[in-house]
Image 1 (cartoon, rainbow over the protein chains, first blue to last red):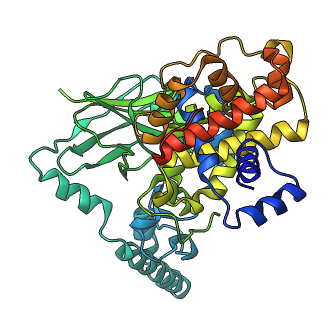
Image 2: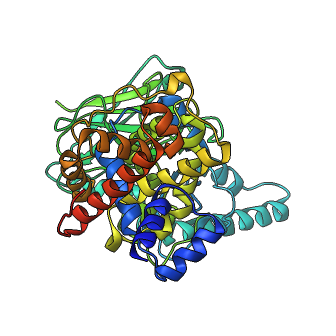
Amino acid sequence: MKDRAEELLVESALRPLDDRERAELHQLVPGGDPSFEAAATAIVLATTPIEPMPDHLIAKIMAAAPQPDFKRTLAGVSAPLGHDTIVGVALESFKPPPVIDIAQRREARKPRRAIAPWLAAAACLLVAAGAVWFAWQRQPGSVADARAALLASADAKPIAWLATADPNAKGASGDVVWSTAQQRGYMRFVGLAANDPRQFQYQLWIFDKARDDTYPVDGGVFDVSSTGEVIVTISPKLHVTDATLFAVTVERPGGVVVSKRERIVVTAARS
Amino acid sequence: MLAPNRTSQPDSLLGRVAAGDPAAVRACLAQYGNLVWSIARRFEPSDAEDAVQEIFLDIWRSAGGYDPARGSEATFVATITRRRLIDRRRMRARRPSATEQVADLELEAPNVPPDTTADAAKAADALGQLRPEQRRVLVLATAHGMSHGEIAAQTGMPLGTIKAHVRRGLISIRNALLGVQQGEP
């Protein structure tokens, strides 16, 4: 009896049992015994030489991976965030009115001969602006404020971006500020080309002195929808011990695990 | 979107994948991509790419079922990987072609990711205690997914011998993992 049970347990670790074998095993060992499959898996882990997965396969898998279902959208910037950063609020389901351009708003406030329609329009704009402001206030604090607060830290000094010859970087400027102690930071861009997230996205890479330069830390994927000033929160996926260089690349939607560095738009080196 | 599962831990990588964190999906691929690819290359040298894509879909779907109390994430990922590869082999009922013959089956130094399992190291030690032919047969059956018939074709050993090697060998590794006193392998 024990021999047969063992035989079936060994076989079940190597292949799916047929119906009759399953019924027999269930009778002999009603609760089953996962230790045989665990032994087979341990042998796999102990004996499989590790090879790198091809880049094109990584890209295919990422393209089929689950997409983020929560997104924070600010004026000019939308960056995917983890669920733990937004408690119970799916901001995408909140539909704020379109972002109002301040210059356009001033224009709308100018007196006109046919005053009533313009007053109505201005009122609408004010309501819309109020809604945007309300939406902004729902954030734990504006990104600009958070950046300003971080700049007060002793180890967080802004480093100016150096634009490359990439067409998306033409005329781009701004800076990056990073605090090692707090493990957070912000990127500020002015003039970086807006992207269509369906076509490509930007991705930050942080080169850490404590790590191999071949594999910089992924600082997060982000979008830019305006060439005006935008501020993006850095979302490093690993602890950064000593950041020496920040680089932003153009990548496929969703980002990549390892960048081919074919299109680098800006860099910022720490002296 | 994947639904969170009661057994997954929000702080674990797989727990975060189950919760729909896109950064965790990337991190999971970075962490276990090479492992899954390498296992698949052994099981299906010519179809490893298709297999790996299927496996990662399985991993995204099953991430919520990961329970840290039952083992490491690497073991969970390797178990899903192996099950899917076994299913694929059986569905195709194909034998390894001449180019897929396994040339070198000497036990290599454990090539386990650093955060993997003590179990893998124990298994490596226990494999080292087996006779070379028994170890060879056991690795072919478990890490290459070969059937007894395929192993017989590969090694020239009788089916009965292969079956006995696999059975005794696997029980021996299992006992080592469980800390059970070893009998005659």
